[in-house]
Length: 140
Image 1 (tube, rainbow, N blue to C red):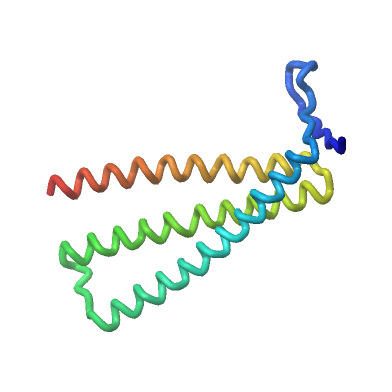
Image 2: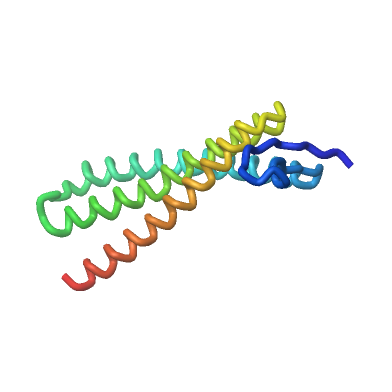
């Protein structure tokens, strides 16, 4: 069985390395491919969102000073951030994983998983902010 050992410095010497077998490497590579696809897809969607937003501003002549205009801008901005940053983090994760598997570099593997951890932190915070905004706007 083909195994890759990634060394990791830890206080416990008995748990100082991580072994990835062929199946683990295949699953990481598959996750990286889908992450890359989703990252690129999110960039395309952000571009379309910007084009539609600019087109809507021109065609509808939206009054951004009004309450409805400000609310629309806030929600469109959050929607944009909710698409762009997760896509960016997924794209970075995919690139680091691809490089780590090709070069057998544990530092690059760690960088990739760091991007994935940032993605989950961002999504958690984003959900909290979104729920808070829904509650606040429903009370107004």
